Image (cartoon, rainbow, N blue to C red; front, side, top):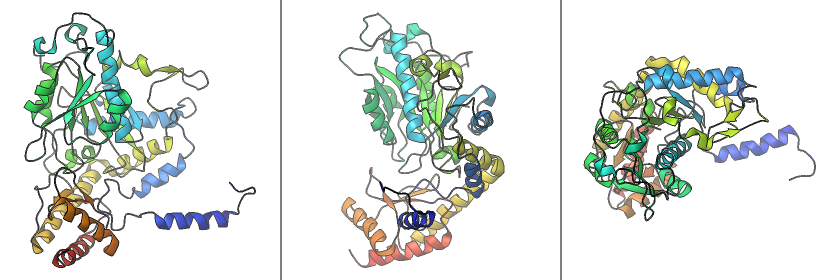
Length: 429
């Protein structure tokens, strides 16, 4: 650090250099984030000083957060959005960590202790749960089995789940049991069910998986979750602001009774600022047993307790999300999704001109395109960046280029990209 401070002009000369090295989303078709809406930026700047982690000092911001949770619960078809319980996070990774943490806490509390020898019923002997909504989403303790001392607690999820769950497994010392997927990369419910055992803490479904944008059969996963009295978390970080606004909306949320929590990222297709994620639970009763595990006394703050995973949280992100959702409304988000889906259609037509086609018919605005082996795919990806400045990504499940058609992309961009891609393919690299 320099001994004396610099002049403002000097600092901004340096900042401009750093900024010029960053992407401005021009020629970016790899990211699930985009340029935030101007109203979100304006609201963010107005609340730049606000810390939602100390709500007594920022009553207005705390009230906005409640409205954001309610609005998103409405998007996710909650039967009574005012009953939903949640808060803003830094994004899908944090939301997923917290959701799984509560799963683990609840299991351990039902068991009494992970090393206990109580004779609870084995999961295979648990009778099928009723699909009729009950007053509480907390299952009876007698139906939750004891963990085997020989095995770790485990989480059952699709093979296509986001890499954040790898972090979660390490952080929470749990095993990931990855279920098989079908030819459309949607999890196979029977495979999910076959992996459940006496140490399973919960299930995860994906709404808009990272590689292909596919959505798992959530209604069938719900039936399995209810059958075994397990929580079901839906990772809708990307798809949460897409599937509800399609011309034919997809069911991904709380209108499916077995869904207990959903993660959704306004800083992706919600057009808010980075970072802005939201974690929603069906109702607070789901957390009755788990909350005390992470709730801590905060005598130096204006609130007596704090129970979120992180302490200091950006009130500016709350304001940005509140503002852009109010400004756009459902109609605005439908137009946003329609624009991106139109880009996906245009992209497919342009691909046909160079004898390429998507590996799958896109469900949303993510398109995977096979161009050869893994080696050739990575080579083309590198050359698109080195020669032409295009940032695209590659799938890991299959050898394919992956394109995310976000609101900052234009048809002119797509035409130019296709032209550059054709040039590479014709060069027989």
